[in-house]
Image (cartoon, rainbow, N blue to C red; front, side, top):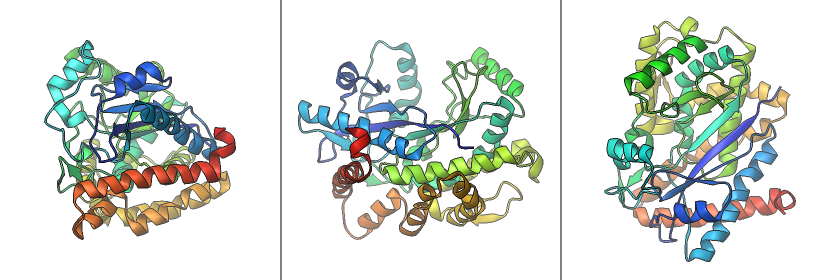
Length: 379
């Protein structure tokens, strides 16, 4: 059994010098398949759900090629990696749709803390009770996926002390989200939040992981992991996704995997523990010292990821996608994007030089993958 997978990708547009420029109103008006965010400086595209990793690779690349071609027609514009306003601009909000009242609320409530770029990974699970249990487990383990994906060590041209500044400052909403014991428990909680006004609508649940579907909270069919920074390299993103899918297959097959029954902590204590782990992973990513949800033991993020990798490798092999999982070794060995950028910064590269090099490397990687793997599928 393999699961349906899809991505929501948010990316910044701007100049080859790293200046982020708001172009989403033009992009959305002229190109199919792109959606605006509240701020015009980033734009979103969504891949069609697929079970096949090769198809997903090309589904990640094709919209970017279309977007890059369009940006070239507009002027000297490109796509900019990273998950924050790395080189400047966090002092102001640039509205993409000034007449949208929900965007009014977002700007007035959160300011530019939400003007971030990220990737949301959606994986299909049709049974709502299995989905709720999967969400409980992955909520506990979401810091590991943040650690692999961190790509926002800069804000306004300066280092921030975070590897993921995005998740360090992002307004998780509502401020307290419990571990849902059942689908009915989730429905009741969402209805209560809407009445209380702590959620403006059913989409206004900004936690590290959430159940998703066509009629939330009632009809749910997928787990949405929302914690990851933008991962520009499709091979790295698919490796992170393969780890998530293999772990979910393990959870589906083994009903005893459940923080509410397997942990020495209460549900409320687990919510506190994972919030602390998320904060630690935002600051230190792969080198963060975390506490394991089962018993509270101290463990480095990279060691926990290595343990999980060993646990699920056989599942990925059996299901035929272990080759997409194996690039995780490279991330663990060489560091995530934030760590690589900070290494350059430590030897004298200023933030703009780091970002401009990353802009070039991102485009070169896309061309390389298209030529090698997607030329026939993208034709």
